[in-house]
View 1: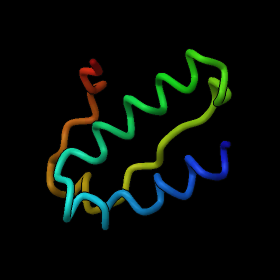
View 2: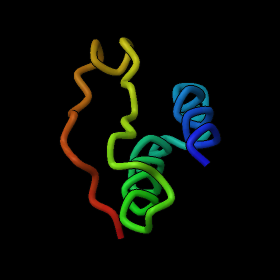
View 3: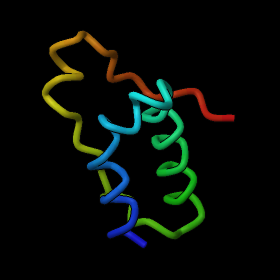
Length: 64
């Protein structure tokens, strides 16, 4: 399970070209997987350098 989440996390930059809010949706899925016990609490999404340069906020997403 962790490997799958990690692979999606690594391709977020490309996914965001087609789905602009892919990173936000993925963050929600990660948080839900942690709550449900599918992912360890230590799992973290690594932000790409490009997102940091573009001034993206690192605040927690609003998940519904």
